[in-house]
Length: 171
Image 1 (spheres, rainbow, N blue to C red):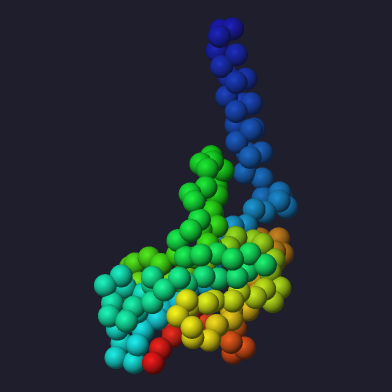
Image 2 (cartoon, rainbow, N blue to C red; image 1 turned 45 degrees about the vertical axis):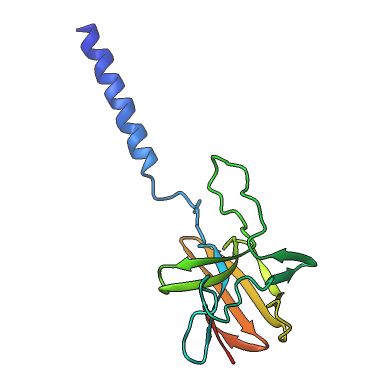
């Protein structure tokens, strides 16, 4: 009988803990914001992917670099960051990779954490072939209001509002 009473009290306490854990009056909200990158797709007027490693007149190996916050990022120059157990989005700098979602090669600068605030940040892209540099200016402003959350994000390519990816057609 004593054993039954102890088991009954344990079940009662566990039941109370479960109901307390499901309390809807908790005003603490955790929001995740998706990371983002500046992405370029570059092709010639015939539609050939100029970032592909085997492209005739390709530009991937021309010495492309980006300048951001006074630092120069050479294409494919960042080392792998150390491992961590935390959710971590490593900044990879400037890289060319095959982007399955576009079915072609892309040039990516980032990723940037989606919950960081950026206000009219400028990135200068030098294509390494003597052509004019291009500039991307971006802003990222995450917001939360209780259970609601969102982000206001904008990109400007050479002063004109644009979406990602930025598609460049070179002559």
